[in-house]
Length: 317
Image (cartoon, rainbow, N blue to C red; front, side):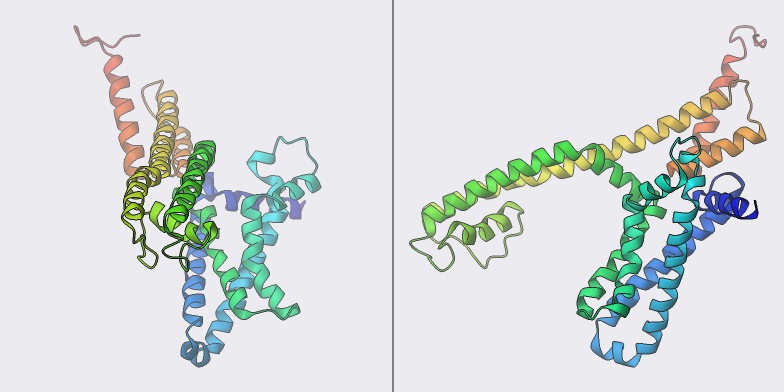
């Protein structure tokens, strides 16, 4: 019974809802700060003199961080069965834990601690481990509502993005073949094959244009200019899709909150329970306090205006 209560309490803290919102938010801020400290430490550790001078400090940061991340990972795996989304699930606890184990956020948590554990048992290149340890920055997606919003945008526009990247791949092949046919006789060292020409096509299509490989024939330059003009529109497609989806995600979240406010103020005022519910919803949706207050104020104003007759000023039943 005690373990069950402790597990339930841990799940509520990780969810950060209701009366556990403050402690849950404090935990999120602490873990986000720890992740940023880790990222800075890993970057600085790649500098040879700093790594030698502060080897003990870097090691302590790593060990303490891995200990905390491991504890967090184990606790989340332990209490995931008590999360609100699984409360009414017909699955058994073991199946819920297996499902959670293979979820994207759980895998990110595992990757955050795996490099250090591997370093103890396996002899591998430290530079490789350092890069893997930098993957801890992806843990921010769990605590940042903005990152979750961006991931939702990627998910909703995945088919459109795949279509855009497919078109870019086709244009890449066409550009590579075209510049190969035009320039391979003049510059066999740079355009000697289609795969070699793909480097020029890639930097041109992405509008980077390093200048290390350029066409020298008049026809090649004309073709390169045409590809550059096409690339301006091609690069803008994924950007426009993501910007539009991000804006739509924000609009949907605001609409969900506005609908919740409309239901809460049906009687013309907000009770403490309704205020608590709206605050939990605001935090879950990642809306600012100013946005929430504005939505509540406008809804109350409109509701109270409709309660009174505009002609006689008497309250309508």
